[in-house]
Amino acid sequence: MGEKERPRAQTRTGAAHERYDTRRAVKGRFRDEVYRRDASGREVLVEATEYRENLIVATLPVLLAGLMANESTFAGGILYHALGEGLAGWDTGLERPSFDQVRLVNEFFRKLPDSITFLDDQGKPVDHVTSTLLVKTTFDYEDAGANGRFIREQGLFGGTATGAKDSGLMVDAINHPALWKDETIRLVRFIQLIF
Image (cartoon, rainbow, N blue to C red; front, side, top):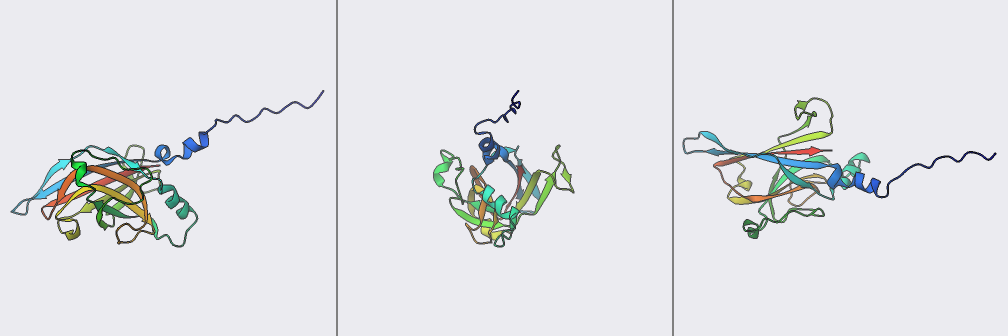
């Protein structure tokens, strides 16, 4: 009697590709809080949006690979949150960002996030590593570089990112209806990344 044939491992064509496609493996969503300061200096919450989906872009795996390999040119993971004007034409037909986008269309300001927090399965902050991050950035009344402009796009940048516009590796892209920002407006953006 011959040796019994071993069963072959079952595989699915494309399963690895599906699993590591960042559009499926990493999800992103965002929400805003918009505050207005009136003439007396009193601050009022004028809008708090529900979470909406954002687009994780193709350069995120490059950033993750560099971090895993301790790439010496990388300063870190998420380093800056950038604002852009996008295009005025988006006011009549908002254009979706592209998966292969590597920068904002018309960036004009960036700053360090206020905080990056780990969240548990219920979305509550925890003091240990999880697979969900919450990035909070406040674009404040005094952020002169952000004032006097319409904001139509935003994105997170890391790796080789600096304070210079268009620098670094893009993590996500958000296009949204135009939001006017001046010294009477504080915008607080919350971005969740779910790995």
